[in-house]
Each structure stands twice: as structure tokens, then as C-alpha cells.
Image (tube, rainbow, N blue to C red; front, top):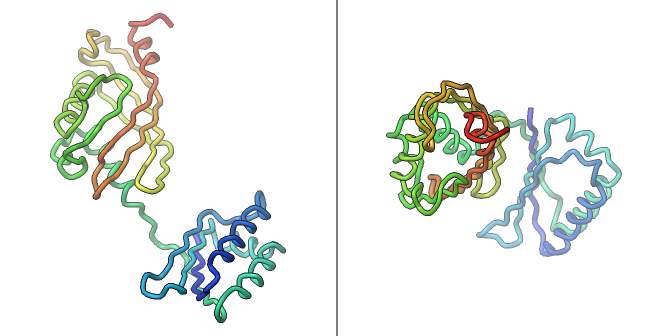
Length: 232
């Protein structure tokens, strides 16, 4: 179970605190078990800060606390604080990155199930597509996405297996495996009935709770070879 330690403190020496954190990260490279850190500054109290430090588990957090660098860093941190920092230990019982949910709906509900009503909810009106098999602005906007998805759905019965997904800031990157049966004309190629597959990667930029931009990378030449269009 993911474990998060919350550190609440006051300091007038945040630049020194920031430098201390950088030194700690450098000194514990390859040893620390911290997976994610976030520092927030109180907008209403300029000396008040809150750190959130994430670990894979409570046990890993305890292992990290036993590093000599961690003990040394804690003592130096206390010296920079106005008073003793306060600690809160949390077991994470729910963890959802909402941007991932939006992207997953595009793959699962729009692409695989063909539910085009979801487009209005998930896709921005000024959506921009960057697709290696498209030129110009043909795939842009909600109607452009509908046309693109429709083209693929008319040509293939397919599924997506999302193998890895990483979210950072306003972007979500999804690694996927795609499998399909060539049932209809695709890029001028008559249906072959062949089973085809490819792997790819899509990076989606989220804005105001909707997908505003996508970058699609996949093995298009490999797909065409499987359809018998290009020499293997």
C-alpha cells in the first residue's frame, strides 16, 4: 500500500531548505526509496510550507528513514525551521489521477466501443491531432476525431491493451498494444480478413478537463506489411 508522509513546517530560509533537499537527493541516489515529492507554499502565510513525500509502502519509508543521509538531512532541516516540524503518516486508500481517467475514456469508450456521444465530454472543441498517418488538419476538432476513429472502426475490429501509463503535469502518455481484424477498406487496401497487430504510444495534453492535443506514434509500416501492402 502506498504510504505518504506529510511534513508541515515554518521557515524563513526556504532557499537554504531547497538547497538541502537537492543535496539529499544527490547524496541518496540509488539508495532512497522515495518515489515522489511535492512541496506547497501557503498563499496566506508566506513562511508556511507543506511537503508530501511518497513511498511504495510504509516498510519502504522505514527503510529510507534508516539511511544515515536521512538522519543528517532531518537534523539540518530542523535547524532551518521556526519550531519543530509536524508530521502526519498516511496510508493511501484511494489514488486517482483524473487526467488518466479522461484518456482511458477516449481509448475504451470512444475508440473501442464507438460511443461518439462521449466525444463532447472528453475532447476539446479546438482539439489538435498529430498522427503519423495524417497530414494537415484533417484530424483536428471533435469532428476530425470522429472521422479518424470511424475510419479505423470501419476497417478493423480491434482492441487496445494499455500496457503502461504515465501522467505528469497536464500530459498523459500511454503505451499500448493494438490487435485487430482487417474487415473493411483501409487506406485504399481492400479487406484481407487478416489478424494484425502493432504497438504504439500516445501522449495527450489535458486542458480544462478535456483532451486538447494528442501525439500518436505507432508502427504504421509494420501494419501495412501485415496487410500485404509492403514487402516484409
